[in-house]
Image (cartoon, rainbow, N blue to C red; front, side, top):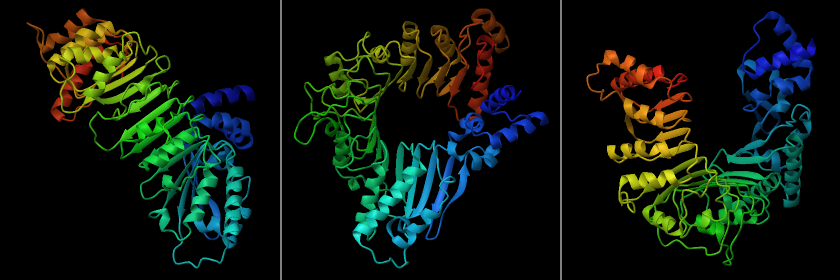
Length: 503
């Protein structure tokens, strides 16, 4: 009976449904309180998003709040070992000085152990106006190591650390060197670090050559040289690298070392680079013979800042997700290199390719040629994001070509207005299509000699049971009058698309 009830209750919890019968409640509650293994199974789904907040001040460190499913809040204190993220707010004096390190030893080890926590976020603040005790460097460093050891026991499986400061730049502190030492000790615990250089976080310059073997790096607005050095130091182990910078040199600095030698990232799966500085393509260095990313699966670049196709070498058989914004010069280079052919990059599942700059469609002679080029990038891709359609001719080009790409399951047409008949043509051309995105949807024009009253009968008789997999229509309309027309179109589509259930 117990086994059967556990199975049934787990099913109810995993589906987000609270047991309604009194009999179920009476059996479920005692099991949650006394059986840790059952809690681990039954509540795991809710704890994926659960955050525990700790706040340490001059006197104490204590748990202050939980963020997660309110319905299960009363169980968190008995199931906190399932917590995925721990946020700790601390006065840095708690870490640095003898007279304030003592509270750590008073914290219950059992109540402050998070076996399943994968991320730690530290928010450090400074108690200004308080007298700072006498100290020497060796004592402070010993306190820092003791604190880090306590963190290691508290979250033994942590994989990612993020550090933030509640006040402006860290180098305004009188004990900046101690803070640098603390950061180094914390980051050495984990394979993943998050840095956001936005006047509230520890700048990347604080990191020295001691950090290596990282698996994940996520940096926002850091200085180019230390970011590139940090990545190269972990080149052999790095699996994902995400960076947002205001300069355009990071791309080349990742590949080419200070001494001119090439760096290879044999394990890198994810590369995302966002540059906030507007630059024109051209003048970027080439890397003959370099194969830096042989196992890349996800590539997202806000601007292509390489002089050749170096990013794509060696990964034609592994690349699955491509999100590129390029200028015409880069496209010309791709075509000369024969980069995107109908048979290359056969594992691509997501393709978003956008042409930027002030040269219009160049180097494409027509909109149809441009659309054809886009659709040929990974012909078997399931998700396609096509850019803004320049004219109605572009839409017709898309409609005429889609039949050659039956593998498309999700189609996003950015800033594009479709008629009901355009939508029907798309759905009919793509037998696997499940999601269609567009800017607006209109009812015009109607077929000859057909009134609105006859439209539903006409659609059912001529287009019955098309798009059996089509279920979601995403329309980004903002006009109230347009909304009425969109609703009319979607209701008509529902007559011929039996599984359409979301708009």
